[in-house]
Length: 288
Ligand code: AMP
Image (cartoon, rainbow, N blue to C red; front, side, top):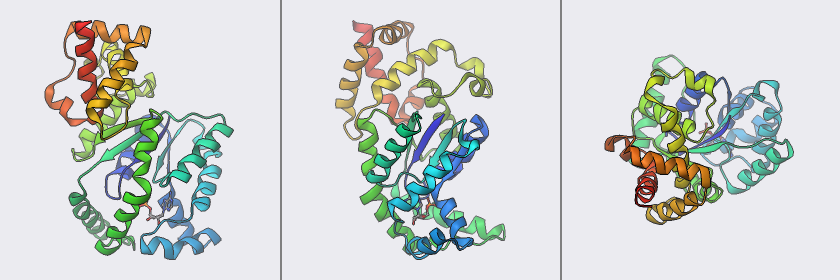
């Protein structure tokens, strides 16, 4: 499985990446971590990145693309990986597309953790306090001032990736304001729905009996239909539903499922942006 976790600083990418590592036996490739290690080891890359990172700006694209390209070639990444903090700009995303193509690898999904900006400062402060409590050194860029700059960098340089990946039908948006546990469950659910999670990992789920094959098949169709540009929910639902309708066998399964009735609770459906269009898909099927 090859994933990208997308979200602003403090959105929980690192935490969720670690959980995905445990669950699916893949590696977490965090450019932030790699760069911090390079800074600590005072390598040429580290020396170049040190001040840029401390100020909250982004390290040049070619530096991080080089690091990631080399890292993907390591044997432990052969089973799959989660990119955490990369790509962060459209040129990085384009470079990633090119290098994956060159390596004959495919990206399964981009999971966006959507959070309220107002909560981020609090989260980063909590992270700093917890780090201090463990007796570890707090990141130099985990201060309110630098966080403001990092958020600005996210908004101007990284947020365009939401559009980039939704256009390529790779984007899955999860409500990152839920508890850590709920976010993990939701990511697990959508990865299963799109068929990215393999059966071995699925078997490890705490209550596999609750997830029938039928549920998965239906939500695969629904989730695929939901991969449409962010910020255009209604249009996305219509567009997604239309394209799903053309998808022969998959669409048929969704139709059958609609007749069986809803598969999720309203509360659960409200939690994840990707699910909204699913309702429309099933309704359409029921009528048709
Ligand atoms: P993170 O740990 O992901 O929050 O990253 C910490 C800092 O490392 C960022 O504020 C940037 O200065 C730098 N950095 C990490 N990943 C990237 C990237 N993909 N592109 C540019 N700079 C990065």
